[in-house]
Image (cartoon, rainbow over the protein chains, first blue to last red):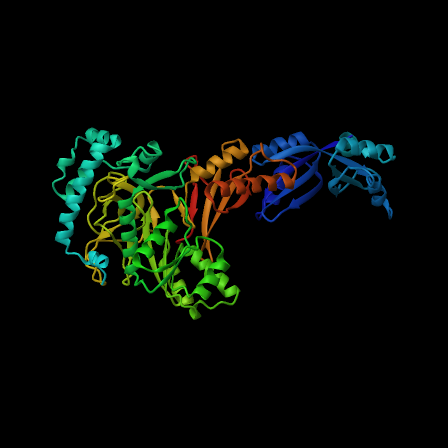
Length: 143
Length: 432
């Protein structure tokens, strides 16, 4: 089970992030989680928003380069060792975590982390088999 | 004064008689031996015999760089194939180089004018000359080499690059003169400082720098840092290579070796010949070359000519230092670069019509090229790695095609300024 994330190309330039946030705000899109991967010259902004299709459409109208892709939302127990327990699922697999970040304000009882795996399907299955709570887009955003 | 050097101090009336005779011979040869020129002269309604005075050259048609490309590789050769002894080539826009051929006599002319170039800077047969230009298809290395050898110098055929080795030889061999691009020499100065070699403590006394435009500020920097005398040399492979015009001690324009390469300045838009002192496009007619004579070849370099006698006593016409070109070709670290070359690389890599911009700067006197490329939705993925791969691939292809390293910067769509729908392709900040 995967959810969709919006990835946006950003130049390392003053005010770019603010501009994107304003476009989404004006379009009534709430940002639920975000992370920025940056290099010396450019960055990639990754967002979980209420309506990924509508958000992508409005950004494209503003000539913003973006891309929709699949990530996995997993509940992580808010106790010591909570994250370690999730990660232990992958220790002896060939599945790599490319990056991860937290949802800012989950509507679920526990924190939710977003993971990008090298193999999202296999990762989702492994997590479910280990009894982890993997969210669908609907459950996460409306739950 | 050597016999060769005396040619630079010739009586102008005698020079003009010589030029007219040589020009008439050249026009006659190309008309009879090169189908391209026969057609061009016929189309323009002129015959070689119409040249009664030097000024009559204005009636004859121009030769463009595209004419060389359209007759690639040997279509403009006026000699028998058996008489060709050398072939050089320079980088072209579409991967096809511009080819130039030489007979034995042409190599002699080239050596002579390159030799006179070096003599104008005070080089003698007691000097040890290190050639830091690339050898090979590029005319810089061999041109400087032959000129220095003709003068009787001890020539070190070092070639380009290998900065520390260059410095080692300057120090250990007691090199007294270097020939290379100005930006490369400035790089040598920086590396020398880093490794603790004081160039003032070596025997180096002269530098001949060319193949790319450079400024008085760079000359001052070189002189200040090293104590050597720095001379500008001008040339282009289509005409012969380095040694078309030379700087003298007066540093007040470059003396054109007009007994071999006849210069004109024209209005690049109308083609009209401009008066002495007026700025315009530099045009050359080779009047002694055998293998590939060119009539009114448009260099795209913007300059002006002055016939006033120089403080050094030379009577040869002087051309102003070239600061810019009339088309968008750039010379970066001595290498010709057209924006269209970059465009073709991006098109091949990305598969889409690219928006890009070339920004040329001079960091610590070394030319730096930045290529800004707008990221398109087609190439964008979620991964940093993907974009870095794209950037590295573009960099590698550019390096492969034009031979220089460029910094590739990925930018957002719409960030490259467009004027009338067309992006401004080149921002050259070197002379600002």
